[in-house]
Image (tube, rainbow, N blue to C red; front, top):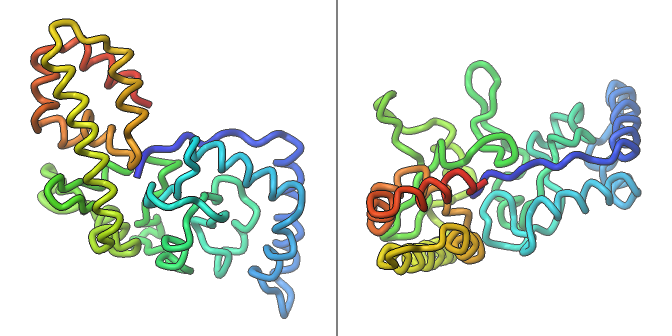
Length: 246
């Protein structure tokens, strides 16, 4: 997972989606309303296609799923599901791009805490690595242990549970391969007497297929070799990479 910047929609698209939501809010009070059918009928409309195009741009050149960062993002996903949250059917911040596997696993489920706040990570609203951790030996994504709370992140635990982030072998292989590429590039930079910080950052971004850079530089990965050596031996380079990462 990676933190994804949510881009703004053109005003005309926002207005058109807003009108559809107003109509859906009116209709959902009536017997027989079906949110899935309403969405299906609107799926090929110009404003929904424009929203999908913006999501695709947000996902980057490889158009990866915003949850697993592995498979191709194939469709619009509603963070709060169409049913029973039809009041969010055409709301832009509720739309993500996801793959078929993550969509199937998530389904209509959004676990919430006692206050109703979601326990599933929204990568467009928060940094996933504040709640998740990575195991370089297995390639698995797991819940992050919060030392100040002496327990695992509830949001991390639920996200891993719902999306099976610690049980998808193919996904773990991709994450581990991405980590090894990142570590190899950093190891070469550490041995360079005067590494070019911008060139290094560009190399790292290019090989970061799984959104692991933030974990390597800002989360627990920074304490591992060769990242801790880069921080110690080339502090200015380290600072540049961390500051310009997002």
